[in-house]
Length: 266
Image (cartoon, rainbow, N blue to C red):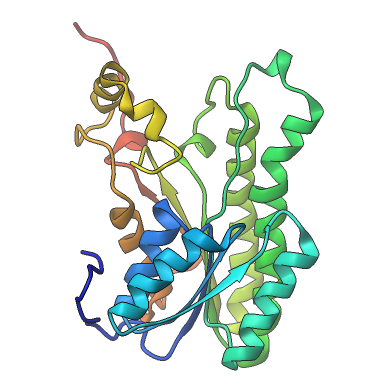
């Protein structure tokens, strides 16, 4: 399900809610913005470049939804915090935050520079912390809110040549548990979605190789990679009042990959 040209928005699961989504110009972030808008939310799309944000926002507006764009780099504290606060001031509240923006470096541990190591954490860990802290302050004042932090299957398993990314995503999972505990008494929920291999611009190069794609899909019980909207639907559920008794949870959306010990029997 997703908004197409000329289609009208249906659904009220997020009616009247204001949602701020990072990394909203493509992939999982864009799919989440579209699904939230379909369900009635005012969506604030955040990213580093205006062009992809406006392309997603235009789809939402063409379908009768409400969307705003906020250009900010989540690895820069002042820029990210300022963007969230400005969005909340414009709209009178902030009901949902989705920390989706990501960055990663590739390489063996013994050839990883300190700069590359820290680059994994600046967006994924620092940005998630700054966003969550800011949202919790706003949500505490209004008496409720939902925060969804996006991790990765790499945060559950040690991933060769992506040690920094794996460590950063693991940090997001445990940080979110702490945030859930602290926010509960103020009716602020914090949950994590853990995607497996999903067909996005970030995985496009890898999945374009037929052999790599086939080998990847062999490891997934459902025998295919995921689509962004499938992750977006999980985020939507956790953001909605349907998940009102769920906090501190980590939801894998990975075709069963994290539930199976893969053994070569051939």
